[in-house]
Image (cartoon, rainbow, N blue to C red; front, top):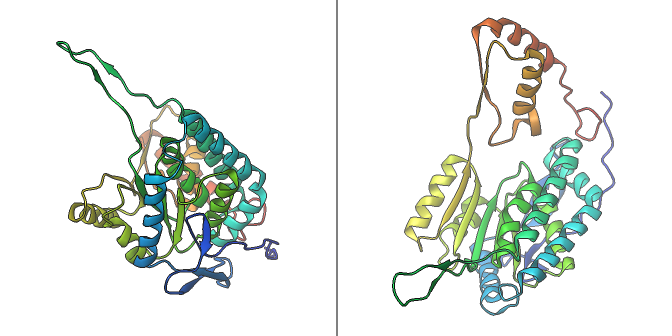
Length: 331
């Protein structure tokens, strides 16, 4: 297979995004991010430490306590989020190429995943002005009601396997509710997330509402998990790290935690199934995104009557998978 030259893409943002600006890390330390096709360095990226987490959380706390975002009408938040979605769509080509360059994922994945992230952003933008409380029927001469309010500063720790889809899955509901955000992105794929932060700024998200850190889980991620001024943590990643986050939450301020951890999702295929269709679905389920999906269909139970046929045809189909440069069509 002929090797495709590196695509023409300019890396624009490599620093931490805190309080609406790109800044160096407190320590000045950086780390390299690499092109998985060649192992060559793409660029150097600012490395967040505990001190940078403190700075980002302080910015998010100030934006929540004193800034306009939580006090803005849901309608106005939704308008900004829809503008954000429009900007991401306008830059889809550049974002897709950049994400492939640093993740090694086939280019076609991005043209599915990024639009799905845009849809999520638009979906929650539509909810921003529809978050209501309830009026309660009380026994006696009392007035009872519930009032839903943003939770505060939300910490989000995100893996590499679907950078932009993951960021929009995480930030969209928090933005719609009026919370402020500190994201720690995994060290392998920080570049598109920094780009997305800049687009959020251009859309009108106020300073301090969306803060993006790049760095290592055992340093920046650990600091976020036990930070006393973060009100909630959302984490997607391994079960092992999920346990560590639960431990950190228990030892700090008992912040609510949402964990999306690895799973083993089985397919069950019975004798009366359309074998060709079942094989197609099984391969999509396990090979999509190179198998780097927490809900991948990584086990298949096949009823005895079609077992031999299924295995034979599944092997034949697997051998036809094209492996190579992610910028080449069909890979």
